[in-house]
Image (tube, rainbow, N blue to C red):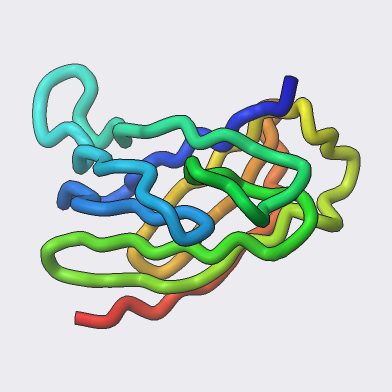
Length: 123
């Protein structure tokens, strides 16, 4: 069974809309602002797939770069993540994507950074 990409919002504003591969994956709350979990990012799980074409649900495909659009109230980011040539990563592996205003950081579940993608927000 293909793994998932766990997408975490590392900004204080809610992601109103996270589009992955042209389809809506939903919204993601901003990080906690108080208490024991202060600055803990909220997340959403998005499926991975061998192929990205003809999908009716949002997926991170293994055969082509994945277009991503992140809509906060203050900013919008449009970029892409490429899962095709990641070292020692199987389609079955879960991945972690930290979404910040100026960078996306993709990691495996063993704590290794696989890629970083600088971003430039549009107000």
